[in-house]
Amino acid sequence: MTNYLYQEQNWQSQMSDLITDPKELLDILKLSSDQLLSGAILASQTFKLRVPRAFAEKIEVGNPLDPLLLQVLPHHLELEDFEGFVTDPLGEEDANQQPGVLHKYKSRFLLTLTGACAVHCRYCFRRHFPYQENLPKNDDWVNIKNYIESKPDINEVILSGGDPLTLSNRKLQLWIERLSSIEQLKYLRIHTRVPVVIPSRVDEEFISILKNSRLRVILVIHSNHASELDEFTCSKLSELVHNKVTVLNQAVLLKGVNDSAEILTHLSYKLFDTGVIPYYLHVLDKVKGAHHFDLDTNEINRIYTELLANLPGYLVPKLVREIAGEKNKTPLFGTETF
Ligand code: SF4
Image 1: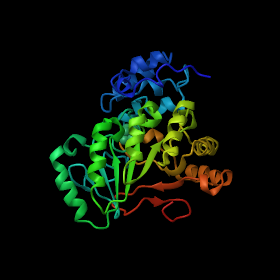
Image 2: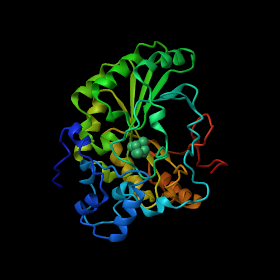
Image 3: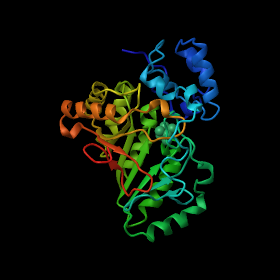
Image 4: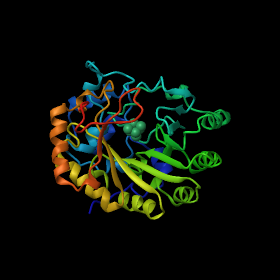
């Protein structure tokens, strides 16, 4: 079994000791290519490198094509322009009603409490999002509450980001208590990649906050490859499940990372064995800088057809694309859109 140094280390110290220098990351992984390094240095000037050490430990040393490394290593192709790849592919700046509130769907809205993430995923559709102008301040709470109460259809709030689990337990608890005080809300969803990249973030205090909330909690993690789900990570996810948190996974279909039915099949089984339900498989959002992860429609079709044949229906994540202005995510397989 791999000997991990950082996995169980306190999450706050991990957050303050992220790898941000491409050279350090490549040195740790014993990768000495000048081409990789110069591309990474250039591309990290527009979207910084950010990798938790606990995640770097899961990357295979000496393998420049490791699927976990490809998700986080800046690449010179990020700097090239490709037709159709834009800074705000989902039109989120238009859906931004007031600081912190992104209301795109009828019964639920996104509350972004932070622009920070523990890891910078190179394909992220929010890599250009102007978070600093859109974060709620403490006294914006009254406006947010009024906004929710003016829309009786809203019954669910989604904490998204950035990544809400980069916030302290104290701050999360404050917001969860505020939301719980609004009677019409029933569900609290938290979208986060932190349990996958710094699993020790799932600490006792956090579990207790979720467990004691009046709201039914759904935690949606983001894992793209079974190699991200080592024993310690799985034990933390199972703890959440055992404490009545519904845990779902969304993945993004990425060229070079998980573009095979075999890899995705393995991911679904690994998740399920941990108590996590495979939820969505997103087609890449066409964000500027992520073109090198894109797959063509025929390839996506081929992979998904094979996945359907490999897995029982309950383990097949829904293949979807988010289209700016649509009232829900658009299912792709077997539809005209696809
Ligand atoms: S953790 Fe999520 S929001 Fe943050 S960079 Fe990765 S995909 Fe984007």
